[in-house]
Amino acid sequence: MIPTDHDWKQGVADALQSWRGSRFPTAILAGGFGIALHVLDALRNLQLAVPADVSLIGFDDAPAASFLQPSLTVLRQPREAMMREALALLVATIKNPSQWRPEKKLLPAELVVRASCAPVGGTVTAKAGRHAAKGEKGTDQ
Image (tube, rainbow, N blue to C red):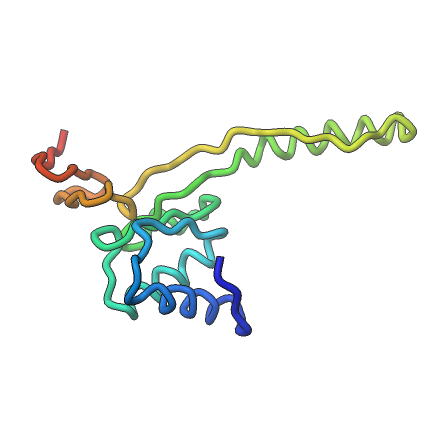
């Protein structure tokens, strides 16, 4: 994490620029879809290709994520399960307010792999989302 005195869009650009000349990360996990869009734009401005130079993963699966070039790999939140859990907690609290206690629920996220990720040192094959490690031939199987 790199602090910035700017807004988050400029913060993304500042963070990426600060890595230039040092060991640049092989992958970036953006904290949201909007941030991922700014990271993608900033990487392009630095003339870095996704995923050939750096992999990019977004958080949450906005409908547009699959239409980006390259399509964005995401961690998809289990929204329906989150809503069910929140509703059940709300109903239980309304029924017995004195019994309410903070709860921690861990719900599994789903990794949706798309074309914005490649293995470290790998090559991207012709089909989006298909990758081969060094020394392997890419396949379209």
